[in-house]
Amino acid sequence: MIMLGGVWIELIAAVVISYHALWGLLCIIRRRGSDQARLILAKGVLDGLGFMAAGTLLMTLALQNWTEIRTFAVVLSLRTLLKRVFQFESQAIEGRLKPKVRESPQTQQLNQLN
Amino acid sequence: MVEADLLMGSKNIIEYLARGVEFAAALIIGMAAIEATIKSLILFFRDSSRPEDKNGVRLTLGRWLAVGLEFELAADILNTAVTPTWSDILKLAAIATLRTALNYFLEREIRQESKPDQKAAERQMLGDHVNRLHSSGEGNG
Image (tube, rainbow over all chains, first blue to last red; front, side):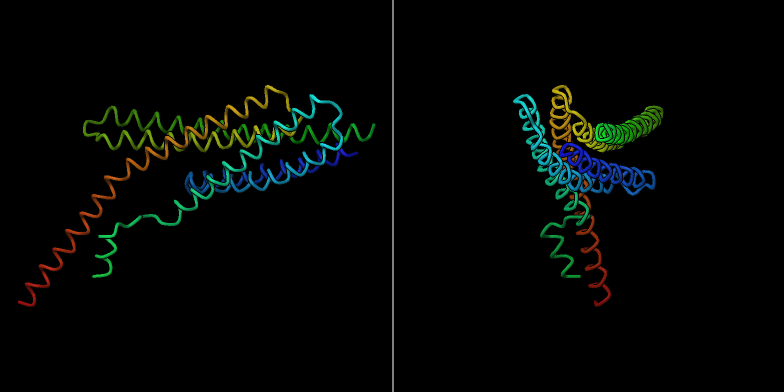
């Protein structure tokens, strides 16, 4: 029962990630740019990883031997690491998408003069 | 018995979703390779091709590869939901490392490539402003 609950939560995560992947693919097809698609996918993966962590934690209740525990520990730490990477990446893409042209101090002075 | 069937069914759905995302990754990488090949051939047969054009093709391909790898990473994350084996875990770790390294070097390259453009744009703006000041001075005089 616990395993089933855990797998269902992971299924929700899978649906969330797949939905965002499809959305990203549509963005690419509509020529909205690779950065926009990556941002959408990164946000979807972040949401999905949250669900996956919840499902995995639920499944730890049903773990029976050391091999399973070791596998789960590695998967969980890898996902946590990936979450950090995706967080960093989505912040970087958002920062890149906001200011299209970064202005130097000289350019800013010129703009003020104009 | 019913519980085992439900478990198996859920895992099958996750597997299908992972295959779908993997297919999307393959599609993106394939299309990017075709686009880069066509653009490279055009540049190859054109006489007046600048080095910036070649860099542009390379950077565009790199950007699309990063997108493709991001999709692959998403598919691998989905795969770890279904009875992860050590091979799956190692694959995920390898792709994550590869992708992060590729992204890092690509970003650095893009930043280096865009620096001359920014300087040229600033120089252009400065020139425009000086011309405007000259013309307004002549008008007043």
